[in-house]
Picture (spheres, rainbow, N blue to C red):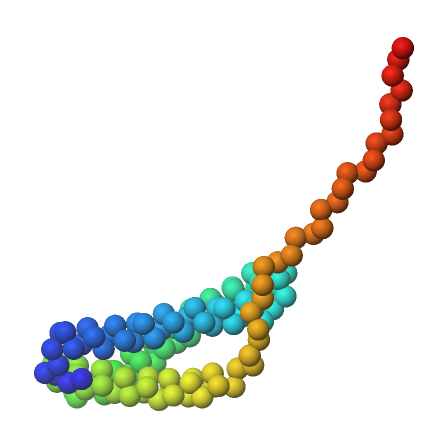
Length: 133
């Protein structure tokens, strides 16, 4: 992408990034939920959401600093914005490559089936009642 990249191409690139993020977010939640006992399911979901939020906040801060640093001078121009965005995409691509390699090291855990319901207990036999005659 550059200063002359059209809106359609930019939208297509953004759609690819969004689809990749969407697929990744669902997969990490499924992995986390499937790797813990049923009683810890809520804690695992909360931990994934917490770390995703913290990571997003940290990434916005770091990428914002990189964007500001890569801008030539203090002027906001189309060429400067394109250069700053290109720099961020290159750093993000490197991080994605590292994450891809790390994903190859994730231990495969088979998916769990439905939780089994406790066996239905038959009602206790009742003693016959004496009828008054």
